[in-house]
Image 1: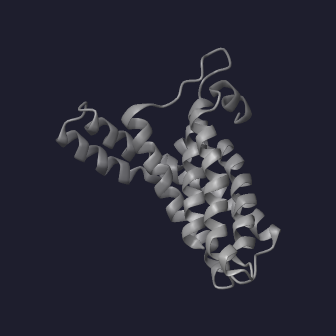
Image 2 (image 1 turned 90 degrees about the vertical axis):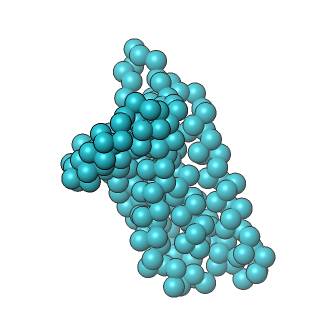
Image 3 (image 1 turned 45 degrees about the horizontal axis):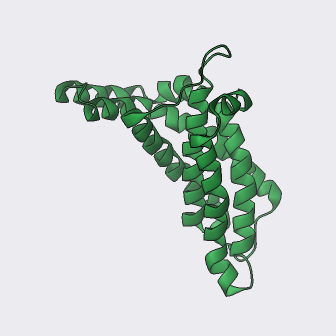
Length: 196
């Protein structure tokens, strides 16, 4: 179950980050999506953040997988996911910028190493400063995480072996992937406005 919920968390974390980028445009400006290597490495940063947070979030329920957790438990796990994942992604922002710079050929190897050291030193600062801009989109992803996670948990606890084996994966991909695709490809101005 941890693997399924982690996949869901990764999709939602990536989607939330890309929506949060759109919110940085003012109302009178066009909402612009992040592109190229920057989008790729920031997506990896968001995926790593979810990979750290989700196993911790489901740790206390995975030993009782035959009994689904209460909706209130999933509400609290969703809230934790919605706060910590954006903050961690913010913390990784300088690393993402450093890797994007070297991939695009705009940064020398020596400067890249310097940026890596700098990124580690200022990680807590970036968590607060950069991560705070991602929080509202994180709260939206928290709602999806709680609802879809609860449905996965119910399917996982099903007495039907087929449902408990395949149901969680079908739900995670069937509901999580459309959310991710809408966050990446949906109307930019609409996404910007709902995530403000």
